[in-house]
Length: 172
Image (cartoon, rainbow, N blue to C red; front, side, top):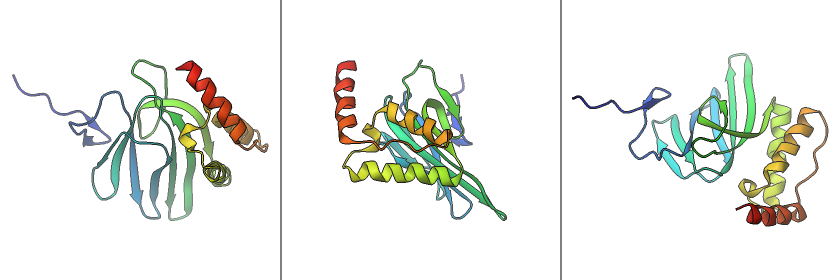
């Protein structure tokens, strides 16, 4: 009986050390062409595939921001930020390019002006000494809805964060 070949993802064999319940994200960096990066989140796994790409993995429940930007000879083709929560095996999820299997989509914004607004809101949260990965998922949904509607979003604050931490403690 022959050995089964290792599973592949994005054309690369998955390393043996990948934990099966992780949400995997392929990151690519080709200066001024393709730039995929994690803006925040705590990876539980990281593996460099080659000079231009690597895989990071997030444990179930982890919230992270995935930024994608691409350009061609005529300018920017895509600017996008997605804020997701990694899901456990068997839970429902939305699929996204470069994310396996997918995640619970909390925010999905396209277009550089709106992406830039989200990045500024993340900076404001970090200035409060709050890790954006610990922010209430409801806030990311609020931000998504307000920006999609062309409205200003409410700033996240310590009062909201304390309430979320208490609620999260009860839910666990």
